[in-house]
View 1 (cartoon, rainbow, N blue to C red):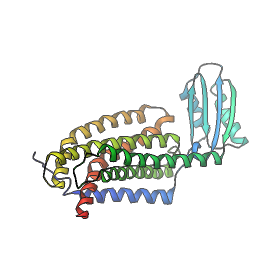
View 2: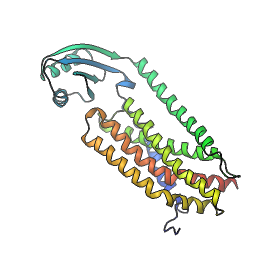
View 3: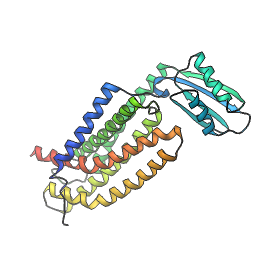
View 4: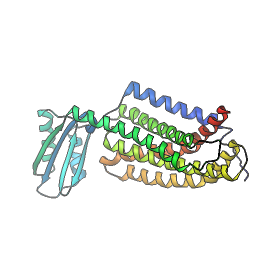
Length: 295
């Protein structure tokens, strides 16, 4: 198969591009931090039931007019849950007045999520990411156990996890940067869900490429670099077409979905784009460089 472009020979450019994005993400996280949502920073939740049917858009418009910068409105079987950052008594009254402008309602509950609960959620989210990474290494090590002699399935698993962490850090950096300038870009439970979702997507894409490399190693005797290039070209069309269709869906969610899922959709867009890039331009070149330096 004739290859008009060598991914492996030009990998230094991809490494540089990834390094720039990665370092920029780290710097943004260090200097800007995260605009934490209610789940992680604490906040207030007001549950109401309107006497007449009202639209979610009308509620959001009224809250916007009242000057609230970050909130979510979630409908549930005729009731509405309004989540905001922690409110004092005056701010709570302003919120209730904004809701009354939409229509008469019955207040079902009002509660505040404290910092201790939020800290526990942050810790669990971190443990979730670490356990997922460990599980990926062990799974790939087992799934690729029939790899040719001289190669280690753990290296394939390690490359997948490096690509996964690469995607996660850059996605987090994008949210850190945007959250510094836009109050509605927050890191919350939806963001963690999107991060784990795109992480699974990235790993799946990496496994497809790595498995093709493993197959070529079993049936061919060429150099690892040439076989890696061949493998990448063989799966390139499938990988890109799958990513493009996924991006279309994610963009549709972001542009047409409600405010409550917009951050989730944005994280999907960034994560899928970075996952596609890392599977092709980061994970496989890392495998090649590992064995090159090992020799």
